[in-house]
Amino acid sequence: MELLNPACFKPTVLDPAGTGPLPSTPQATAASVSAAAASDRGLAGSRGETRLPEASSDLAALLRAALGARWKLLHPHIQARFTLGDGEAQAEYVGNMHQVRCTRLGGLFARAIRYARVLPHQNADEVPFRFDVQPLRSGLGWIKTRTYHFIDEVFSFRSRMVLGENGELLEHFGGGLGMRVRLEVLPNRLVFVDQGFFLHWRGLRLPLPRPLWPGRFVLVHRDLDAAHFEVTIDVVHPWFGPLFHQDGTFERMEAAWV
Image (tube, rainbow, N blue to C red; front, side, top):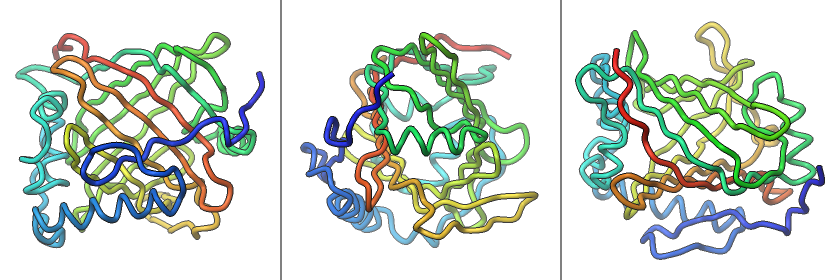
């Protein structure tokens, strides 16, 4: 299967006002995210004031804790999408990834960290995709499972997202790889942006030097209507440009009951 040249696609980067895409360069990505962060801090106050709540069986509790006052700015459809009803065990989302793309260099990187099963190395269109999120049994956090149904392979991986002691989100993948995550709220959108990567082992975290980062990770959850939403994922390296791009539309399945 032929891998695409980096010039074949451009990552979707939204401006802080949510009015449209910005130029797809690492500098533009950083600038847009920084502007959104400054705007959110002005609305929500200092992030240092985050208070960690007790463990919760509701998925929304993690977002409320991480966003603070910005939770109220999040579109009601997105709030509802991460809220579990009484007796619900998890939220299940299904749909198609319309595009799954990686460059040659991205494909090599995905194969190199295949032990962690974080990124697929395939290029494909209209890939059936399922995303399950369930609350941790102990503590505040999520267990996330993603499954891509490629023609030649089912690619699935899990991660654990928790709220750190200082109020930042931490996502732990397999193989000891981890990512610090910042949330940004834009009109009709919830954006997940990496704040750096680390290795984790038995509760210890070792920050990875910037040259070893796979690139800037940006995931945009954009509300379409009460039932449907769009997800775009981009990984852009500061030296090598775009490495990965994915986009698709999804809906939440009917409740899964305990």
